[in-house]
Image (cartoon, rainbow, N blue to C red; front, side, top):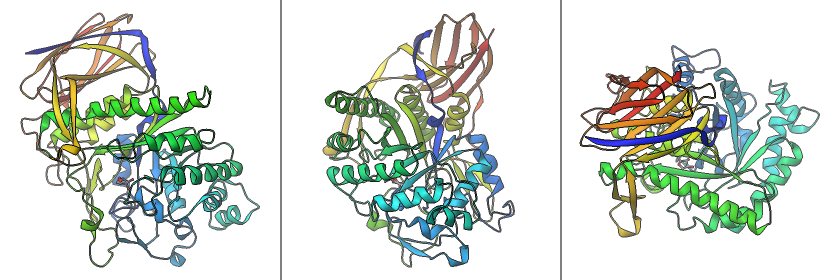
Length: 515
Ligand code: AHR
């Protein structure tokens, strides 16, 4: 059996997790909104059309902030189309997903849904087909108390009090050729800078995120962040990152190694942001908003291949069905985010319901948890606290990972030094500790021994693990609990030493409280 020895110390910390690290994302895309969170006429829908079966699962999942309305969708969106009397709202062609957007759900409904769910809203402005002036109008509509055209319009529409949205994204993936009105780094940087100025003039309490490059494998990556921050450094608090892990190559070790590339990506963006700060002789530190992350590949295809005749409303697209190994890679991503809690202060799982999502629904039918639901729920429920530095000694391997698709050499990334144990440890501030552990060894269990120095001693609260002999097993309407965490037996605690045998290819969460 492989072994892993872990040493950590209560006083050696990475950083406190920010509440916004545990966010998710709702886009007008497929059945995320319509048939997902919102379905008037559904047996569980409330008077506003919000599905209560979905909301119950969202509460269990526990996201803290929700990004809206896109994604690619936002780059062609007129926010005015989604406010006011529903019968007067226009249906529009959505260029991002080749669908018809009925606009029966819009900003005010989203804010109400967030309030009902206890989640902070995050809004994105359209810097594709629109620009700074419109961004100013939108924030006036949302956040200005009253006495002006757009703030009074909100009040007329029935929302007397301002929405008070604090976190705003300046567009989405603006370097992606697939984006409606993509821009060069300088074009985007200037537009984002001017939009940010107006938006902050309207409401100085807001925080703003500039778009980073759409991914680490984009040819624009690096140069893009540098140029965009050169323009926007004084205007923004955040830069965004996006990553979708894939198993196109059907190579499980490489797939499970891929979250380590998120570590590299984060550290590279930090380095670039801090280099811009150095160039400007500034002590300001730009924080990272990892506002799209997930596993996504089966339903990922070029724009043209997505065209469905007839511009349907809420077509069932991007309905990725997640299996056991997806949950493992996903758990690895959770650990990468936690272990960079000092600079990744915000992150959004893309997305929430039906569309590459932890929650699946049948329109008119039930809702259930996908495999990835569980590692996210563990993260969002138990990840709050001080992330500790961990020294992990165990065997490692290397892998060839293909992103976005293989097997062309230009897409190959060699991942080296992949430790079989990927681990994060979070201290709750009251002597309690949670260990998040991914055993990437497919062949056998792993003996994990942890010495948690400077802790007085623990008692075991819970130990759960997810694993299955069939790494392709999935949950479904018929078998909604096929994959779920089960109790992990045999965890021993002696003072501040914890020992556990982690099953092969498993995601394990061990929660300890002060003795
Ligand atoms: O989350 C799905 C899509 O992925 C988003 O709309 C876009 O920002 C990204 O390319």
